[in-house]
Amino acid sequence: MVAGSGLIMVIRHVELAGCGELVELTFLLREGVPADVIRVLVNQEINVSSMLLELLRMYRIYWERYGDEGELLRIIRGIMQYFIGGIQSSRELL
Image (cartoon, rainbow, N blue to C red; front, side):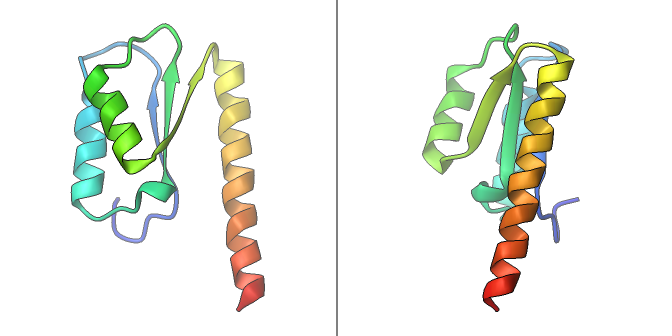
C-alpha cells in the first residue's frame, strides 16, 4: 500500500474505535510517505483528538470535515482533480 502511493486518503466516517486514524497516520509517516500526499477527511459528528490535531499541524497534513456522504464525495472528487491536475502540470514542466 505505501510503496509508490501517489495519493492517500484517510477517511473517518463512523466512530468504530478511538484514534484509529492517528495510528494509520503515524504508520504512514514512519514508512516515509510524504505528508503532502496524505489527505484526512473526518465526519463532523466525530470528535478529533488533540493528538491527531497536533500530528496534522506538525506535518502540515491537509484535513477537512464533512457533513454527509454527498459532501464527502464532492470533497474527494475535488481532491482528486487537484491532485491529478498537479501531476499533469509537473509532467508538462519536464
